Image (cartoon, rainbow, N blue to C red; front, side):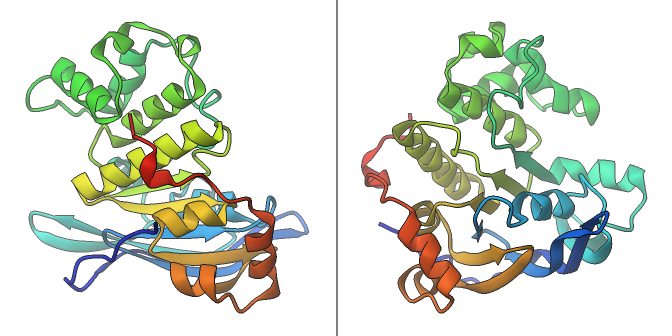
Length: 277
Protein backbone atom coordinates (compact mmCIF):
# COMPACT_ATOMS: atom_id res chain seq x y z
CA UNK A 1 0.00 0.00 0.00
CA UNK A 2 1.19 3.51 -0.77
CA UNK A 3 0.09 6.97 0.18
CA UNK A 4 -3.17 8.09 -1.33
CA UNK A 5 -3.64 11.07 -3.64
CA UNK A 6 -3.95 14.55 -2.27
CA UNK A 7 -7.13 16.56 -2.44
CA UNK A 8 -8.34 17.70 -5.86
CA UNK A 9 -7.98 21.27 -4.55
CA UNK A 10 -4.84 22.84 -6.08
CA UNK A 11 -1.98 22.81 -3.61
CA UNK A 12 -0.36 26.03 -2.45
CA UNK A 13 3.31 26.18 -1.48
CA UNK A 14 3.90 26.31 2.26
CA UNK A 15 7.70 26.34 2.33
CA UNK A 16 10.22 26.90 -0.46
CA UNK A 17 14.01 26.64 -0.28
CA UNK A 18 16.20 28.10 -3.00
CA UNK A 19 19.89 27.35 -3.50
CA UNK A 20 20.66 26.43 0.10
CA UNK A 21 24.38 26.13 0.84
CA UNK A 22 26.05 25.16 4.10
CA UNK A 23 29.83 25.09 4.54
CA UNK A 24 31.75 23.88 7.55
CA UNK A 25 35.25 25.21 7.04
CA UNK A 26 36.45 23.91 3.69
CA UNK A 27 33.75 21.20 3.57
CA UNK A 28 30.44 21.84 1.78
CA UNK A 29 27.72 19.62 3.26
CA UNK A 30 24.73 21.22 1.45
CA UNK A 31 25.37 22.37 -2.09
CA UNK A 32 22.63 24.39 -3.80
CA UNK A 33 19.55 22.53 -2.54
CA UNK A 34 16.19 23.81 -3.78
CA UNK A 35 12.88 22.22 -2.83
CA UNK A 36 9.24 23.09 -2.37
CA UNK A 37 6.76 21.80 0.21
CA UNK A 38 3.12 22.00 -0.79
CA UNK A 39 0.37 22.37 1.79
CA UNK A 40 -0.96 19.05 3.05
CA UNK A 41 1.65 16.87 1.38
CA UNK A 42 4.51 14.72 2.62
CA UNK A 43 7.80 15.30 0.88
CA UNK A 44 10.35 12.57 1.45
CA UNK A 45 14.03 13.54 1.60
CA UNK A 46 16.09 10.38 1.24
CA UNK A 47 19.74 9.49 1.02
CA UNK A 48 22.48 7.59 2.78
CA UNK A 49 24.03 8.75 6.05
CA UNK A 50 26.14 11.85 5.52
CA UNK A 51 24.27 12.98 2.41
CA UNK A 52 23.16 16.22 4.09
CA UNK A 53 19.50 15.44 4.82
CA UNK A 54 19.47 16.44 8.48
CA UNK A 55 21.48 19.57 7.75
CA UNK A 56 18.85 20.64 5.22
CA UNK A 57 16.14 20.08 7.84
CA UNK A 58 17.92 22.31 10.32
CA UNK A 59 18.53 24.98 7.71
CA UNK A 60 14.85 25.05 6.76
CA UNK A 61 13.88 25.74 10.38
CA UNK A 62 16.84 28.06 10.95
CA UNK A 63 18.19 25.88 13.72
CA UNK A 64 21.54 26.48 12.03
CA UNK A 65 22.50 29.39 9.82
CA UNK A 66 23.16 28.82 6.09
CA UNK A 67 26.18 29.98 4.17
CA UNK A 68 23.78 31.24 1.52
CA UNK A 69 20.30 30.66 0.15
CA UNK A 70 16.67 31.52 0.83
CA UNK A 71 13.82 29.86 2.71
CA UNK A 72 10.35 31.33 2.13
CA UNK A 73 7.52 30.33 4.46
CA UNK A 74 3.93 31.26 3.62
CA UNK A 75 1.86 31.42 6.78
CA UNK A 76 -1.92 31.27 6.61
CA UNK A 77 -3.79 33.47 9.08
CA UNK A 78 -7.03 35.31 9.63
CA UNK A 79 -5.77 38.18 7.49
CA UNK A 80 -4.67 35.94 4.62
CA UNK A 81 -1.33 34.45 3.66
CA UNK A 82 1.93 36.24 4.47
CA UNK A 83 5.36 35.36 3.15
CA UNK A 84 8.49 35.37 5.31
CA UNK A 85 12.13 34.87 4.38
CA UNK A 86 13.05 32.78 7.41
CA UNK A 87 16.78 33.30 6.97
CA UNK A 88 16.53 37.09 7.07
CA UNK A 89 13.77 38.01 9.49
CA UNK A 90 14.56 39.29 12.98
CA UNK A 91 14.99 36.79 15.86
CA UNK A 92 11.80 37.94 17.57
CA UNK A 93 9.74 37.32 14.44
CA UNK A 94 11.43 33.94 13.94
CA UNK A 95 10.58 32.99 17.51
CA UNK A 96 6.94 33.84 16.89
CA UNK A 97 6.83 31.72 13.74
CA UNK A 98 8.37 28.68 15.43
CA UNK A 99 4.98 27.74 16.83
CA UNK A 100 4.00 26.98 13.22
CA UNK A 101 7.16 25.03 12.37
CA UNK A 102 8.08 22.02 14.47
CA UNK A 103 10.49 19.08 14.38
CA UNK A 104 10.66 15.49 15.63
CA UNK A 105 14.24 14.32 16.06
CA UNK A 106 15.71 10.93 15.28
CA UNK A 107 16.73 9.86 18.78
CA UNK A 108 13.71 9.56 21.12
CA UNK A 109 16.03 9.15 24.10
CA UNK A 110 18.22 12.23 23.63
CA UNK A 111 15.33 14.51 22.62
CA UNK A 112 13.64 14.41 26.05
CA UNK A 113 15.02 16.03 29.19
CA UNK A 114 15.40 13.16 31.69
CA UNK A 115 14.90 15.57 34.63
CA UNK A 116 11.48 16.71 33.47
CA UNK A 117 8.17 14.89 33.79
CA UNK A 118 6.07 14.38 30.68
CA UNK A 119 3.77 17.12 31.95
CA UNK A 120 6.67 19.58 32.13
CA UNK A 121 7.90 18.52 28.69
CA UNK A 122 4.52 18.99 27.02
CA UNK A 123 3.79 22.22 28.88
CA UNK A 124 7.08 23.82 27.87
CA UNK A 125 5.97 25.03 24.39
CA UNK A 126 3.00 26.84 25.97
CA UNK A 127 5.30 28.51 28.49
CA UNK A 128 7.89 29.56 25.91
CA UNK A 129 5.29 31.06 23.57
CA UNK A 130 3.04 32.49 26.32
CA UNK A 131 0.14 30.45 24.94
CA UNK A 132 -2.95 29.69 27.02
CA UNK A 133 -5.08 26.81 25.68
CA UNK A 134 -8.73 27.71 25.34
CA UNK A 135 -9.95 24.95 27.68
CA UNK A 136 -7.02 25.04 30.08
CA UNK A 137 -3.54 23.57 30.03
CA UNK A 138 -4.42 20.32 31.79
CA UNK A 139 -7.17 19.53 29.29
CA UNK A 140 -4.86 20.30 26.37
CA UNK A 141 -2.11 18.05 27.72
CA UNK A 142 -4.57 15.18 28.17
CA UNK A 143 -5.74 15.79 24.61
CA UNK A 144 -2.18 15.69 23.25
CA UNK A 145 -1.48 12.35 24.94
CA UNK A 146 -4.72 10.90 23.59
CA UNK A 147 -3.78 12.04 20.08
CA UNK A 148 -0.58 9.97 20.20
CA UNK A 149 -2.11 6.95 21.94
CA UNK A 150 -0.90 7.48 25.52
CA UNK A 151 -2.85 7.59 28.80
CA UNK A 152 -3.17 10.75 30.94
CA UNK A 153 -1.28 8.94 33.72
CA UNK A 154 1.88 9.38 31.60
CA UNK A 155 1.99 13.05 32.65
CA UNK A 156 3.36 12.17 36.09
CA UNK A 157 6.17 9.96 34.80
CA UNK A 158 9.71 10.59 33.55
CA UNK A 159 11.16 9.66 30.12
CA UNK A 160 13.19 6.72 31.44
CA UNK A 161 9.93 4.99 32.42
CA UNK A 162 8.85 4.63 28.78
CA UNK A 163 9.86 2.44 25.86
CA UNK A 164 11.51 3.92 22.76
CA UNK A 165 8.25 3.96 20.83
CA UNK A 166 6.42 5.63 23.69
CA UNK A 167 9.14 8.27 23.98
CA UNK A 168 8.82 9.06 20.32
CA UNK A 169 5.07 9.46 20.79
CA UNK A 170 5.83 11.98 23.54
CA UNK A 171 8.15 13.82 21.14
CA UNK A 172 5.39 13.89 18.54
CA UNK A 173 2.88 15.19 21.12
CA UNK A 174 5.27 18.00 22.05
CA UNK A 175 5.75 18.88 18.37
CA UNK A 176 1.96 19.08 17.93
CA UNK A 177 1.36 21.17 21.06
CA UNK A 178 0.84 24.53 19.34
CA UNK A 179 -0.88 23.13 16.24
CA UNK A 180 1.95 23.69 13.72
CA UNK A 181 1.46 23.80 9.98
CA UNK A 182 4.71 21.98 9.20
CA UNK A 183 6.37 19.03 10.91
CA UNK A 184 9.93 18.11 10.00
CA UNK A 185 10.41 14.41 10.77
CA UNK A 186 14.13 13.71 10.95
CA UNK A 187 14.36 9.91 10.65
CA UNK A 188 11.74 9.55 13.41
CA UNK A 189 11.67 5.74 13.42
CA UNK A 190 15.23 4.76 12.54
CA UNK A 191 16.12 4.17 16.23
CA UNK A 192 13.05 1.97 16.80
CA UNK A 193 12.32 -1.70 16.19
CA UNK A 194 10.64 -2.33 12.84
CA UNK A 195 7.18 -3.14 14.21
CA UNK A 196 7.25 -0.24 16.70
CA UNK A 197 8.49 2.11 13.98
CA UNK A 198 5.67 0.99 11.71
CA UNK A 199 3.13 1.86 14.41
CA UNK A 200 4.65 5.34 14.75
CA UNK A 201 4.55 5.84 10.97
CA UNK A 202 0.88 4.84 10.94
CA UNK A 203 0.27 7.32 13.75
CA UNK A 204 1.97 10.09 11.75
CA UNK A 205 -0.19 9.29 8.76
CA UNK A 206 -3.37 9.39 10.86
CA UNK A 207 -2.37 12.73 12.41
CA UNK A 208 -1.68 14.25 9.01
CA UNK A 209 -5.10 13.30 7.72
CA UNK A 210 -6.78 14.52 10.91
CA UNK A 211 -5.07 17.92 11.11
CA UNK A 212 -4.07 18.62 7.49
CA UNK A 213 -0.39 18.72 8.43
CA UNK A 214 2.48 19.18 6.01
CA UNK A 215 5.45 16.84 6.52
CA UNK A 216 9.07 16.83 5.48
CA UNK A 217 9.95 13.19 6.09
CA UNK A 218 13.69 12.47 6.22
CA UNK A 219 14.67 8.84 5.83
CA UNK A 220 17.01 6.34 4.24
CA UNK A 221 14.20 3.78 3.93
CA UNK A 222 12.58 3.67 0.51
CA UNK A 223 9.68 1.42 1.65
CA UNK A 224 8.75 4.02 4.28
CA UNK A 225 8.94 6.74 1.66
CA UNK A 226 6.70 4.72 -0.64
CA UNK A 227 4.13 4.32 2.12
CA UNK A 228 4.09 7.84 3.56
CA UNK A 229 5.23 10.34 0.92
CA UNK A 230 3.54 12.04 -2.02
CA UNK A 231 6.80 13.28 -3.54
CA UNK A 232 10.44 12.32 -3.03
CA UNK A 233 13.77 14.13 -3.36
CA UNK A 234 16.94 12.05 -3.36
CA UNK A 235 20.10 13.54 -1.85
CA UNK A 236 23.68 12.53 -2.55
CA UNK A 237 26.74 14.39 -1.26
CA UNK A 238 24.81 17.53 -0.39
CA UNK A 239 22.82 17.78 -3.64
CA UNK A 240 19.39 16.68 -4.81
CA UNK A 241 20.10 14.31 -7.69
CA UNK A 242 16.55 13.21 -8.48
CA UNK A 243 13.01 14.20 -7.52
CA UNK A 244 9.49 13.28 -8.47
CA UNK A 245 6.35 11.53 -7.26
CA UNK A 246 6.82 8.48 -5.06
CA UNK A 247 5.90 6.20 -7.97
CA UNK A 248 8.42 7.86 -10.30
CA UNK A 249 11.21 7.55 -7.76
CA UNK A 250 10.36 4.13 -6.28
CA UNK A 251 9.11 2.36 -9.43
CA UNK A 252 11.11 3.96 -12.24
CA UNK A 253 14.22 5.62 -10.77
CA UNK A 254 16.53 7.26 -13.30
CA UNK A 255 19.68 7.63 -11.22
CA UNK A 256 21.96 4.71 -10.38
CA UNK A 257 22.28 6.09 -6.84
CA UNK A 258 18.49 5.91 -6.33
CA UNK A 259 18.47 2.36 -7.66
CA UNK A 260 21.16 1.46 -5.14
CA UNK A 261 19.12 2.93 -2.28
CA UNK A 262 16.12 0.87 -3.36
CA UNK A 263 18.18 -2.31 -3.60
CA UNK A 264 19.85 -1.75 -0.23
CA UNK A 265 16.65 -1.31 1.82
CA UNK A 266 14.87 -4.46 3.04
CA UNK A 267 11.12 -4.57 2.66
CA UNK A 268 8.98 -3.70 5.68
CA UNK A 269 5.94 -5.62 6.88
CA UNK A 270 2.65 -4.28 5.48
CA UNK A 271 2.28 -1.08 7.51
CA UNK A 272 -1.45 -0.82 6.90
CA UNK A 273 -1.93 -4.05 8.88
CA UNK A 274 -0.10 -2.76 11.95
CA UNK A 275 -2.36 -0.76 14.33
CA UNK A 276 -1.30 2.77 15.26
CA UNK A 277 -1.91 2.27 18.97
